Image (cartoon, rainbow over all chains, first blue to last red; front, side, top):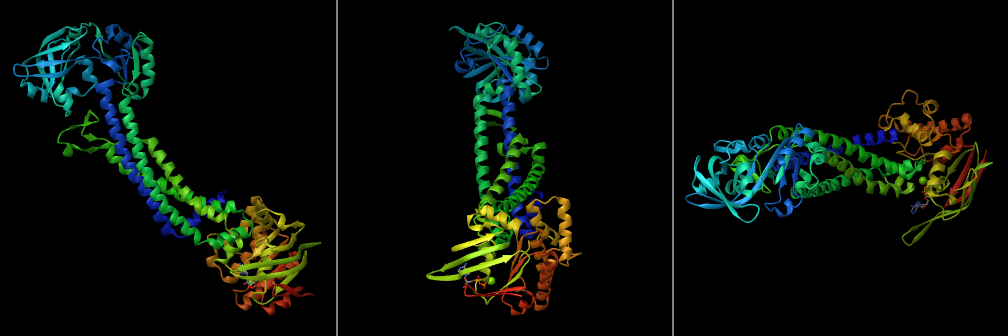
Length: 411
Length: 227
Ligand SMILES: Nc1ncnc2c1ncn2[C@@H]1O[C@H](COP(=O)(O)OP(=O)(O)O)[C@@H](O)[C@H]1O
Ligand SMILES: [Mg+2]
């Protein structure tokens, strides 16, 4: 077998230019693919990072019906005690409880329907980069339960600035309409139309009061230092959470985003497979040509008593060696070529006109750093070798059909 | 005991509407240790006969028995193995694998036979010495003359210790001096090592070397002289 491998390798050097060109086509294809998937994976990672910090946390605790129905009364209660127990089992995690109430935000000149978020100001500052998005004023203070942050577009529409009064009217648990006076403490600009135009953010206490649900939250989100440990953290959180609440990891909590990424990745893979098939056709053509030129030689090998299958395996091995070398080179080049994307990222600011952009409703930074998708790179490598060997199958099969006498007659 | 036993061998080829009787009832026995020259003009059926004996071609009727095994009863794979273990071949030209050295070409059959490395090496070196290629082991076919290439082919044919070596006009592409030397070499191998050769040629000058001359005309044996 080693000898056959060596023979195959030497055969590839016979028409070195042809082998190099074919190998280069495979390698170049892989390099381009790796650069593309590095960008793709980077944007997925950014979407998830942003989604996790703003929407779900790595682990989220909610009322089992909240995700479906989003009714104000579907809260997790006794969150102070819960937070302490969570801190005991997950000392490194940041616990960020969140409330959401829908209602109307009114200024002397206008009123706009908004979603009011109640957050723990200290925790939220650690886990989201919302505080970086402030263009005026300052971040919330847990001691100030009249402070509100609003988006720039909302501020425009209400025609209010820092320190101005706004009134929130909303329907909490039960059916009474409650209202609360706030003072604009800060104005943020995320680049997301939804966030900037229709969201207010305040501390937990006023939202709990509006909702008539003290010491409670719609979601208790947990943010980990190491996102890979989400499943383990969920299990720990579950052990200290009363059984009536649902404890989920981020992927369980954001199934649509996860599904979307999976779908996008799949469609990317399909496209790559199409390119792979096209390259494989080229390889098939070359291998077939090189086999046709050597029919007599294969006839001699058959004649001296080499079994047809083994003769054919020489051609398969040639494909394997070519595919392997080209793949190693292609992956190496791809990793190197994608390195700037991973370290510096690709800056979409010029296209987007702002430092953030919206992807599938999630606000992300306009500078998307690539991320090496190692599993995918490995998969593509295996596929490239597989495609090359596959394109040697027909030529190899052709050899097994040869009659030695006829083969030797051709020169 | 005969190594080769051919009985009433017929081989017809269909060329469009014409049927060519390449072999038309050949009976032939070859004993171990013989050096048989198969003579006959071009088109007389020499190649066809050798190919049928070597299991490379399938007779239309009749039988070929090699060392007790009837070829007609073997599968393709079994025929391969029989060729590998019992027969050696020297073809007219382009016998060798161009990317392998003289040593590796001669070694190839032993590799296929599964001979262990140490023995393999000894046998290949000895065989190359026997055919007069000492010191040229590492040259590739492209770096050898035509006569030297045919010697490598002979080395490959005999390295596997076959019961019989079939050589189809191995000197056809050589000048007469080189060709003669090659024949002398095979004769020497026959004399000293007792290797059985069947050797096809249309060159009457070769006859002198032969112990036995079989004349083929139009697919039939016309004469069979032992001397
Ligand atoms: N594959 C083939 N198809 C048709 N005719 C063939 C084929 N092989 C040999 N022949 C014919 O059979 C006859 C004997 O050929 P061959 O055995 O090659 O003779 P030799 O080797 O003595 O020159 C010739 O007439 C040749 O044309
Ligand atoms: Mg002939």
